[in-house]
Length: 336
Image 1 (cartoon, rainbow, N blue to C red):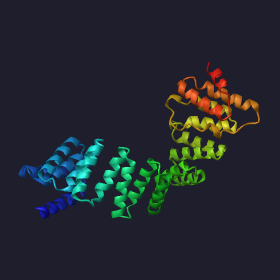
Image 2 (cartoon, rainbow, N blue to C red):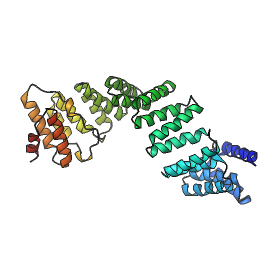
Image 3 (cartoon, rainbow, N blue to C red):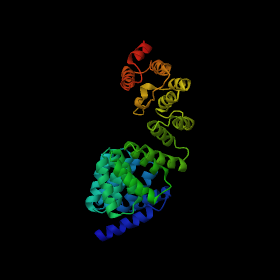
Image 4 (cartoon, helix red, strand yellow):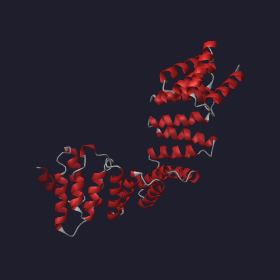
């Protein structure tokens, strides 16, 4: 029985995974099931065809029936888990991948897919373990180095992320996203110069990636390369005028260059109620010899905080005051 099942599965895979004519596959499966309602192959083929034609619930029914007919085959669990993941039932998908791996502990596809589902559940450290197993079974797997690097980045293992992403880059040197992610890891390790090099390489491969310009501008602020950062943020606005946090950063860096008029214009476009962690570091602001500079800067900030929440107003004001850049009382005056 087991030998027959393995041959059947091999036939199913060679038929379904190579064919993109899903309506034809569906017709074939219907004929098989009409001839034999207990056709294991027929239910898997019909489930596969339905899932690729957007009939997700029908696909689940067929995979359930296939598993009911033979619960000792790994492939129906794998196919059903893919459908569950598509429905964002990631825990259900993980359970199916677990079952497939009980049947075949060296099932690489199940480890890879389970890792993706765990990432969706923000179980990044668990995902890393699955990618470890994949690389143990296949040390040349580019996708595993790539995805393990991302999982490590998301779990704040920046050195580990850099190591994996560097290995992935050695295998696929023309993938811009790898350089972008490695740059983020380097930025989190305060290696601004290294991060900028990776963001530059990202842009060399994909000149229309706003995130690379944005992140590069943020690192240049740390190095007090304000004029260059202005150009990076201008490019972000050109590519995506709605990019999150771009105007608060652009306004900030223009203040640093003394372009208070440009800063005021950018501040007027800031949605302070929707700001994320992209708030620039007030401590990066250079002191100016002109005593009017900071006074004007304070009022520009205060004027454009009117629609922000009290918490945002206070956090910005307190940060700036702590840095010795402004007087919090001037903020309060400007807000009243």
